[in-house]
Structure formats: structure tokens, C-alpha cells
Image (cartoon, rainbow, N blue to C red; front, side, top):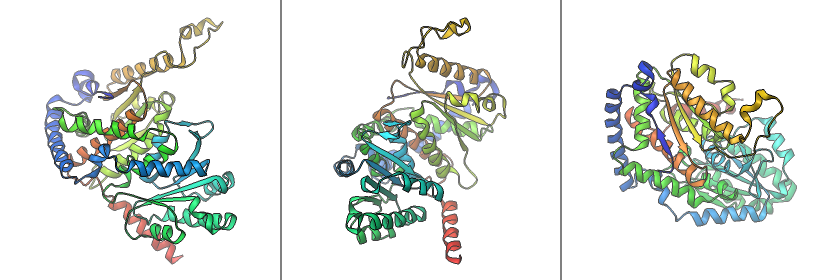
Length: 426
């Protein structure tokens, strides 16, 4: 496997009564394996196309061509999309971004995931329309927030560059049926890529939705898919699949009052991964009074904020750490005259991070906090594709354990309907 998945410190044997019982876990694991068997059946008949996405190659040339078009014509890509339409791409492109210059590869990439008018005005005043491509993503083609932004931008581009220039500055991704976004695209002759109707937005990171921004950032999208395919293969063929272990453990610990799941990677490039997983987990599983809240944390940053709560607050959290091998990585720390800083001598910044990763894991265990640890030797496209697929599978298996549909969001749709009604009445 591309990653390790250590769940040993989540059990009673390691942390006492606050941990999962092996007998209860075994029963949940049996149920999770039955869920995996159902996934295998779905993969064979392509009932869930997300399970075959890692092996798919027929769409990659079109994605690469669209990314080349962006790179050839523009130096800035603005991605417009709510929820899964933006978070997958944001997670992937973090591999290539310099957070201090907002540069990903040769192309500056910005993700607009809200409709705060102040932020949107700042965007318009900060980019050159002449050298900017707008990638608008809406699975249904009816996302009000994205369509509102698109309509404003169409007018801006037409007013400043002329109507004929619009196709050079927009790309749409939407489902291949009649919808508002597709009609706009046809009206203005805007290039469009298809959003698979059978892959929901929050599961779409490994489709064009996430891979087009990733390719524009200079990333290897074949490797992303390869990593995802590896995890699906292992999950559907191993006797004790890792995503099944994760789902079973969540279920066992939930019965012991662990209603908050904490995701704590020790790597800035994985910070957007937390936002992506938060939507995936909560929107997929928060139904019929089921679900656990997903709390995002970042090491070592949140050692100085949230860790106190994890260690000494209510016993309601199950913590997942993602640890990247950092030993001997980064700049060497110069020796200081102050003898109290001697512990830093002959070490790198990465050595300090590695020591803090280990110390936090051991401290959590010492304080009886259920903990599992993902270990990765490197963070690249294949690894990130694998991690994303692991968490997608873990979410799907958990949904089956709770007998709910992981792929709808009925409560959210109610809010969307009301917002449209309020606008109509205004």
C-alpha cells in the first residue's frame, strides 16, 4: 500500500475503557466486509462509476487538452464552484501551490467557493480579464451561486473585451443534459466538459472537476488516478481492507460516545484535504440522525490551539493523524548561543516536525484518546489520489453500516429551494 494505517491506539488494550472493544470491532468489521462485497458487485457492473474512475483513461486526453488551452491563453485560472465542485481541485492543486505567491506551476489558480460580494469584488479588481480563464463547475448546471458569478463575469468580459472573446476566457463543466449552465455555454459558444451524472459532486475530485485544475497546475493526473486505482484494488481484494477497518472503527467508537471525528494532518499541503474530507464525510453521512461531526486541525499549528481540548476536554473525539516522513528534511537549524536552545542543534526544521508528530501521537495515547495514524513516506500525486480514494471508500462503507444513502443531500436541497423562493419574493 502507498500508505500505512495504524489503528492499534484506538483500542481498549492501548488506552483503556475509552477505546474500542475488540469484540465489538470484530462484529462491525464483519458488517464492513459485507459492505465491501457489495462495492465489489457494484464495481463489476459499474453501478458506482467512482469505483472504476482510477482505471479510466478515455477522458484524460480531453482534460489535458483543456488544460493546455488554459495554459496557452491565460496566466490565471479562476475556478468557480461550490462544495465538491471546488474542494477537490483545491485539494489536488495544493501539491503544486506556493502559498506565498499563489502560483501553481506556471498558472496562478484561485478557487472562489463563496459568494461574499466583498471577496468577489476584490477578485475582479485583482485579475486581468485579458489573461484570465474562468472555469465554472456545476454538476446540475443550476447552482445559483455559481451561475450568479458567471453572469456577472460574462458581462464584465463582454464589456471589456467584446462578446467574441468570451469563448477564450470561459470553460464550463456540467452534466450532459439540458440545464441553465449548458444553455449559457451554448449561447456564448463556451467550451464544455461533461460532469458524469452518476458521480456526485463531493465524490468528483478524480474526474475532470478536480483533474482539470490539477493538470493546469502542472500535476500528473495519470498518477493521481493510479493511486486511486491501487486503493480500490486492495480494498476489494484484501481480507481486511483498510477503508473497512476505518469504517468499522468509526462505528464501534460512535457507540462509545465518540461523536466528533478529528482529522489532523501534519503537512500544510494537506490542509485543503481536511476541508474536502469534511464535506465528503458530513454531507454523505449526516442523515436520519446519523453522523459524526468532522473537526479539522493542522499539525503543528493546532498543537497550540485545539490540542488542549483533545487531550483534556470531553471524551467525545476520535482522532485521525496523517503523518508525512519529515526526518532530515528542510533547512538546518543553526546553533544558537543560548544554551537553552541546544536541543535544536544539528537538526533540521523537518526533524522538529517529526519529533512533534511523534510526541503528539504519544501524548494523545497517554491521555486515553482513541487515535489512528496514517503514515506516508512522500506526498505526491499518487499518494494523494490514494488517500482521497481511501476516504471516499471509508465514507461509502460507513454509510452502508448505517443503512443510509451516501450520495444524496435532502436537507441541503430544501435550503436551496427556499433561497430561490426568497429571491423571487424580494
